[in-house]
Each structure stands twice: as structure tokens, then as C-alpha cells.
Image: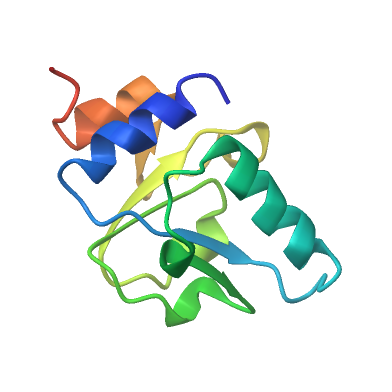
Length: 110
């Protein structure tokens, strides 16, 4: 997604960034996901990649996701990344793009 790499690098300057994927339903995808992350986000340490069965176990301050089912039970602050399947959802802060994410976290200025 356009701007993702640059945005994650900026977020890492202020926050501990973790990539979380509920990937266990399709275990054959684990290696592909890891390889994709290694190729596109080589600066994310392997210890900051969590491949799990359910994101409900995640206990961080913030979660950005495009699926409300992952955000609804989350106890921290949520940011819903806008997609066709969540247009009508109103109970989370929203981001239309990675620039919106940077603005939300107030890290957009250099």
C-alpha cells in the first residue's frame, strides 16, 4: 500500500511497532507472510512479528486494522484502516491512508 514503508519507519522512531497477523487458520501462509515482510519491511525485527490464531491476545496501547472484529474486543485505542468491507463502521477512529495514520499519531512532520 502506498506510503506504508515510509510510515512504519516514521512510527518506529517514536513507537515500538509490531506486525500482527491472525495467520494460523492458514498455516501454509506463515512462511509466505514472513518472506513478504522480510522483502518489503526488512527493518522490522523478527521479534516484532506476531503470527497468531487470534488478535484478541494482543495487549498493546494501539491497534491499526481493517477488520472491526479485531478492533472491537481490543482494550487500547483503535484505528480502523478504511476498506470497502468496513465503510459503514462508525465506532472506531478511521484512517483512509498511511498519511492519516501518521497524522493520528502526530508523527507526520520531519
